[in-house]
Length: 194
Image 1 (cartoon, helix red, strand yellow):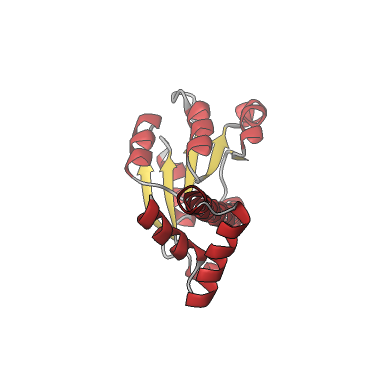
Image 2 (tube, rainbow, N blue to C red; image 1 turned 30 degrees about the horizontal axis):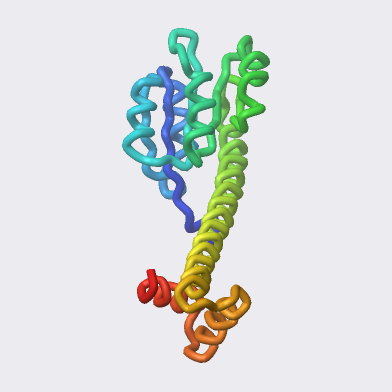
């Protein structure tokens, strides 16, 4: 897919109107939509419960507790790419806690040019996770098919007293002769003998 055609959903959590303005300027339509803006961790958690986001941007603020824990949880529980914005004096401590979990960090104050560069990194990271998700899904489908075929083979072994090799050859030959996937033959065997 061409990245120019991709649209990314964004959750921005920031108590600062100025930072929301800067972030909304960079993370805007047509490439970023919808962009949900909340002011605290509780609202961000509710937003995450309502829908999945491609990016979660967390503006840490001294008055807002739990932002670091929320960032770690967001990375662990979702496929979102998380960007954490830390105060200068908290940056090193935040980095120590968050980098090992795969959270991206930027130091405040924010500049539009740095955020534009960071948005490119976030897009690259999200596309990489999409590929991993696709590979994982493909492997899960393949494993499901193998389990289905094995179940059909064991039914042939127990019901028709075939050897495992004979059951395997029977399924392959039926699939080849009928020009259907082995999965279809296995499903029919399970329906008949299961």
